[in-house]
Image 1 (cartoon, helix red, strand yellow):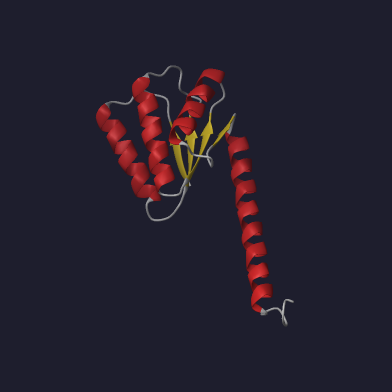
Image 2: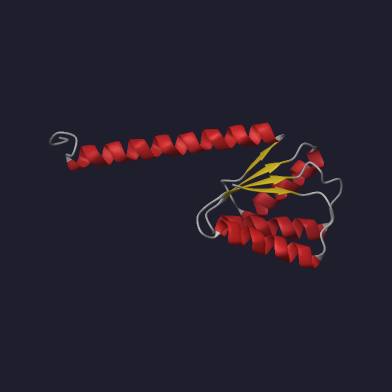
Length: 133
């Protein structure tokens, strides 16, 4: 998991470096990115652009994003980013504990789905003791 804590203003060079670092961290395999936005007090269109670019990088690498935003205006920013990136897998939560719980539950659901799929394939192939008919 990659954890980003946003708060201070970033200049263009820092934004480019951040985007490149996130892409490098998630390019090898799909990764979850936790974006903590609680320290953001105000934002401008450049921050929206940065978050949208990051979300698109995450989505392009089949990663998942969870945004921690505890105030309505910042939650609205995260919602806008997710909407504009058209990412159905991203999530917004109010605190880090909720993010961790959501991630844990998501991983358990994926593991259960994989087990069910493998069991069904085994039954279809007859590997579980005979003809599935």
